[in-house]
Length: 311
Image 1 (cartoon, rainbow, N blue to C red):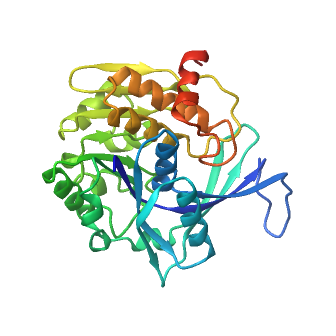
Image 2 (cartoon, rainbow, N blue to C red):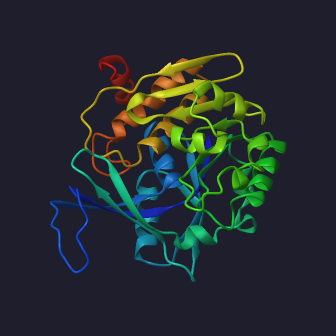
């Protein structure tokens, strides 16, 4: 397979519009409710498949109805689920996403089975078949974060597999303390600007890039939402604006960007075209409610690059 997406799998329940939470004991109404498979590894895998990339998924879900939903959604999107394990002692991870009128989101999250994934759970027979190992959701997998994840990335590199990493928000506040063991074994790193700032201790894009490059990371993409992205390698740097689309729901846009970027890497496109595909995939994502509903095939996604003005 081209990419193995290893990490967190979540069921997202999305409510919209929710511009304020009720006081204790009170009730607020909202107009739209949807249930979707979510989580960084899930979203990236599905988006990659839509873009025509051969992709597998690896992680833990519960032995429950939400777990059934995750598996069904992955299978329907032609994602190989041989690497998904079911945990009988923990429920499938769950997030309630409150979407405001302007598309911004607030989250209530239950870690569940994602918190039980450990280094010993991984199937190396599957990992060895991947050209790229993408770890999605670093900093929210307590048994896998830190040295265990570093061990896996290091082993993958020794097998000649390209390694890719995407982070989530670190509610523990440890950030670099947790992630630092992993960074020397990462080829492609695609954090959000806020996450990168916490790791590098600066908001300067070139400063962040230099900080990360010192660990040996060759390709860095910093996601900045509606401000686009900053991408750099040792040879070049560039800024790719976000494409202007009607924003319905920004949930999953960062994962979609990652999928577009990895698709470009698989196809061995140049950095500019790869980053443009990433930006277009992120733009497609925000046009529909849910993390993957707006993602289309490669041809339709590339039309966003060619036909859209940039914001």
